Length: 241
Ligand SMILES: C[S@@+](CC[C@H](N)C(=O)[O-])C[C@H]1O[C@@H](n2cnc3c(N)ncnc32)[C@H](O)[C@@H]1O
Image 1 (cartoon, rainbow, N blue to C red):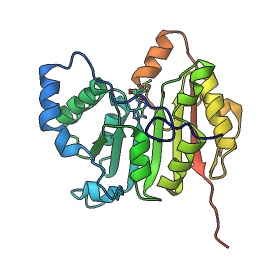
Image 2: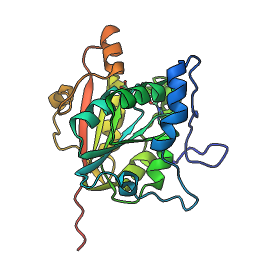
Image 3: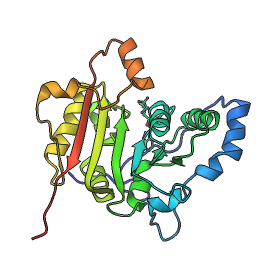
């Protein structure tokens, strides 16, 4: 599949940062006071060593990236449960960023850094083999066939994720949309650097380890999409001979 080039020659369609209409006064204040201390900027040299973002954490067990964290329910909970794991959250919707800032502030969470632009840009900028796990939970489904190419999962994004993940890295995915689950599985099975260790259809309804439903999973259930799909893909161990 050929990458889709946008007007800037970037290799896919992306619809930019979305600004919420009604950010509350306290959230606006968090954007001004808290976000700058957590926000990741990509320098001109375009390369990020993620450990350098967490110099105040002397012993980091792992570094985990979440793409499209929405209101940050999963990210904030995981970060509180695992204070020795460093988390990077990517989200483009200011309403969601505001909700997560509020959780970080209220709970004094220290192990999260934020990137507030297209996740693909930071995936490209992160040093190779630098991230232990990536979560993509309930990505925008783009259900119409002519819009499928806007889905986050593509051959190109899987290539970039494979580059960024460590040798034993994992890519966790969840969706309530069967067509997107099949799409993702098909892309993984076709990809030279990922595999699906469980390899049995029944397992795809088993929630990820330590799972609690995200906001979008709850919405899906309310709308009657009871059974979600969950995958933890792993990087293939490629031996240099
Ligand atoms: C359907 S929502 C799911 C939110 C959350 N993961 C959940 O399960 O409740 C998808 C989110 O991904 C964000 N998003 C979409 N494309 C993105 C991208 N390329 N980079 C960062 N965030 C993105 C959207 O703004 C939206 O908040």
